[in-house]
Length: 250
Image (cartoon, rainbow, N blue to C red):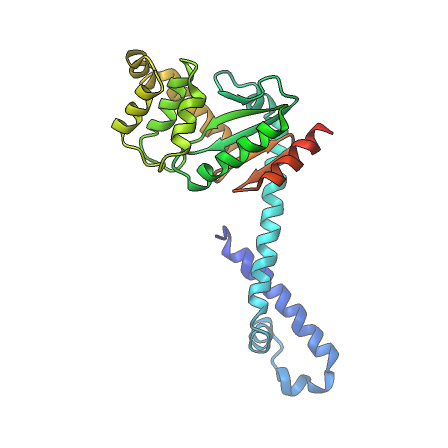
């Protein structure tokens, strides 16, 4: 969960030393009995932990919140620097209202359970709004052969992206190649063209560019949504989608 253990420990030591110093100042008459003559940082932290062990959790929460704020700031900065690649990348499938005045960019992986849960929420919010556009970013970071992402982009070349996207998002997320091809048949794809496109360097390149863009934006998980300058990671409710869309529009 935490990227830098030394930073956590530094914050913990700072908080605990501060608390201990406050206790010393608050009760100078007890200083000798409470802390003895050894006032080095290790002893202070040890005594503070003995008296208030819950401060460990406080330190972890402080660190986590600081890291989240820092990461969010960095992501917003990168969104600003890469607007054209985010919004105008050739080949990205479009959903919702193609002429909408607000764009929701969705980075997702079909193997991600939260992405599949978010699918219905996002589409309901966009449908109710009526004037929002979705840009789909195939972002297969969960490993495997990426066959579903490749198949979806192959279907996009035949104008059937939304059909296969819905089928994949309402599946188990762990489809075998034979199951992927069966879905392609069911939605009416030209299977010869599908087989040609799914192996094409062009589709491989599109997915690679999405993954590289995600690295630039410091996206570490799915689903991730970008609405204007807001970057939202994880599963969110329809109210949050509506709020962010309205905020961007205003």
